[in-house]
Figure 1: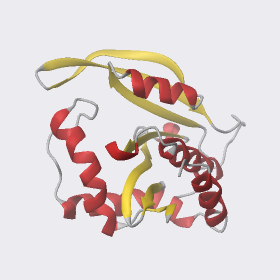
Figure 2: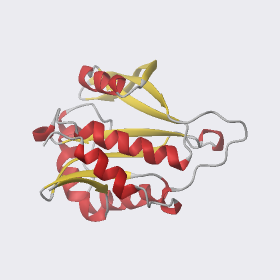
Figure 3: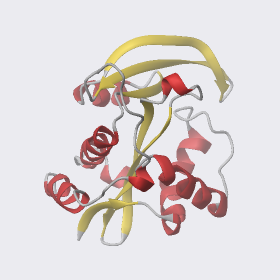
Figure 4: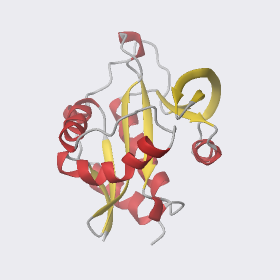
Length: 196
């Protein structure tokens, strides 16, 4: 069985199995050291207070995950988030990333967020193409902003608008306080769209 669901601390090992090679072998993430399973479980729990973290599970194995996190600290930024998606090598180009992202965006929209930012370490044509196919628009490059794998790296920024920009917007709802009755139907709909 294949399904999208909320992540939990018990998924830390399965998620790290996907994420660790990106830390160790690429500059797609600027994280340098692979966190312990315990530290990563705590990260998942902390994120889930405010933002969704989703996994796509195939026969009990995590095939991919997506999550949102704070864009910046100041209160005026509270309507914006950063999003990330990572897919196991065996499930690349199967539609899982799109299913996870579109589910994530629906949740973020209901929470009251306006902007979703994708931060892509360049070059990464596959990620750029994917994000633009999801509606993200490029707007800036931070040149030589990070150093990893023996090179200074550029980072590109893309933005997706998910809600109207009303005056006097209410603060976004914390994920832990959001009415989640809509999630089972959303997850089923998006999971059914993935190539089996």
